Image 1 (tube, rainbow, N blue to C red):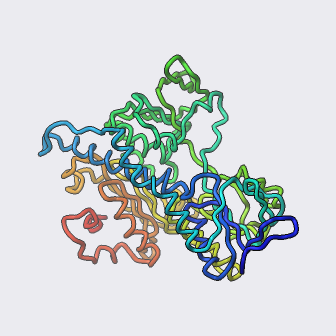
Image 2 (cartoon, rainbow, N blue to C red; image 1 turned 90 degrees about the horizontal axis):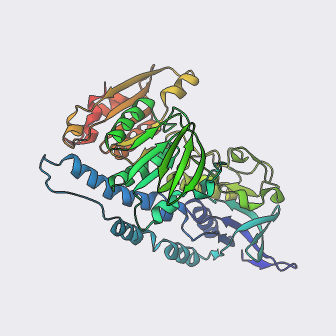
Image 3 (cartoon, helix red, strand yellow; image 1 turned 90 degrees about the vertical axis):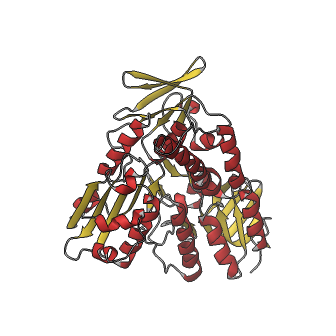
Length: 452
């Protein structure tokens, strides 16, 4: 099938995709391989958040921060001298990874025969869009627009920087305050503190890093505070204001001063600019209302994937899998329901916090009988040889059969080890199955044998 022009001057495609991160191009390429006419657009540079403003640049910065942090911890144990981060050099290093992303993504899509447009897409009808000044119609529309920081709805919100701003700054401010006690604040706070900034995290409630095991979060908070990061809970921000050459944050009856304030209070689907109502696409407080096949319940021509999908999780592998699921459902009529039950995730600090599967609170709420294995492992060799300070685990198994249902790790190499547990959950393995393995020694993964 080929692109066509209708009587109104609109260009018609079999599929129009909005968003060029991980999910959008996956949908576009799969349908194009079936001979469909496909167009794609983005209001920002091609490549999406992960490759340019998220996981990839963050991990580049984290790798350097982790190296410096480790050198400092081991000073006097074989490491001598001073180790520090040159921020401008680090940002240049990051750009070696992010700089080529847009050109590569655009070239690859064009080579595949996909029409590459640029501009904000807005619905003008159920199967009609306006992209910039161009009118487009399509049999199917894929929304893969990612996520954006949620509105804080406080005075002075315009003074608050985003994680995008943090990753682009040429010099490091002396004092950085993060609003929100989630993943962004802990990861970027760790990087900034390792680079020499004074870091404060303010969180509105008592529970930090919601979704992660509270016992391990507590150990991570201890480690962060030892590093010099100030973490304040039950401290909702009521306003931000300019005060001379710095910024002030008002929270309860306290005032915090900083040179930069960063939004780390959560993200929401980036769909506000799409004029969804004109496309007959219904929403609720979570985002676009979709069925299990990621299809709009009110407009069956529309599918949603990636961070814009309220059913999924804001992770790049999930976005890619969503893209594959949506493509199959568009092509073959709703045959695939995505499975989010064993998706690992990690907080890249030092130590690393990682999780997959069921948590203890969720097990209790769902009345699932579990056996819980938990320990503080700061005295284990893996942790002591790096002077890491804190480590631990919480592992949940099915009480009747012993199958692994959830794993939560804090420590060296936890971001790699968690993948073994993810595979175990997917394949229905027991803890005994893992402990029968002859793991390489001495490695962090060998510590699985010590879980009791």
